[in-house]
Length: 212
Image 1 (cartoon, rainbow, N blue to C red):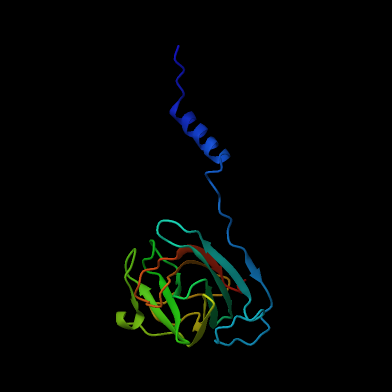
Image 2 (image 1 turned 120 degrees about the horizontal axis):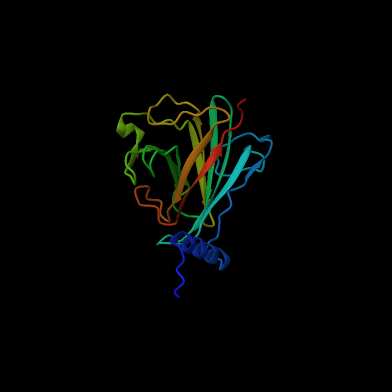
C-alpha cells in the first residue's frame, strides 16, 4: 500500500520544516524612538540628540548585488512644516520616497548627497515603476525644499531639510499631522544622483506627529 499525502498537507509540512530549520527569518518592524524636540533645528548636517521628535533606523542586508547598509530617519513636524534628517552609512547619496503607488511609481522623492563639503538636495518625482525620477521643475512643478544642509564624515552622510507639509505642488505629497506615510528608501556609493542605488533599499512607514 502506497501512502499518498494530500497536496495541502505537503505544503504545510514543508512550511513547518523550513521554519524549524531557520530558513525563514521574520524581520521585525523598525522601532520608532520618540523624544521631546527641545533643540533648535539647524540644517547643519549634525543631528542633535533632541533636535527631532522621532527617529527610525531602516536596515537592508547585502543581497542580489547590493552591499547592504542602514539609514536613520529623524523627523518632526507641526501643522505647517516637516523637518527631516537622512543619516546613511555611505559616502554617496541617500534618498527617501513618499507614498509610491506601485513599486517606485508616483513617489515624491528627496535625494541628497555631500561632495567637497557642499550638500545637494533634489526634489523629484518618479514617473515609472522603477524610474525614471525627474526634478519636479522639469515636470512642470516647483522646487519646494525651503532649507537644507548636510555633512559627510567617516563614511556617514547626513542630509537635513525643511519643507511645507503641503507644498501645493502636484508632484509633492501633502501631509497632515498624525498621518501614517508609506515610504521607500535607498542609498548608493556614489554622489552621482543619476546613478542607480547599489547599496541598500527598503520600505517603511513614517508616522507624523499630532493628529486627533
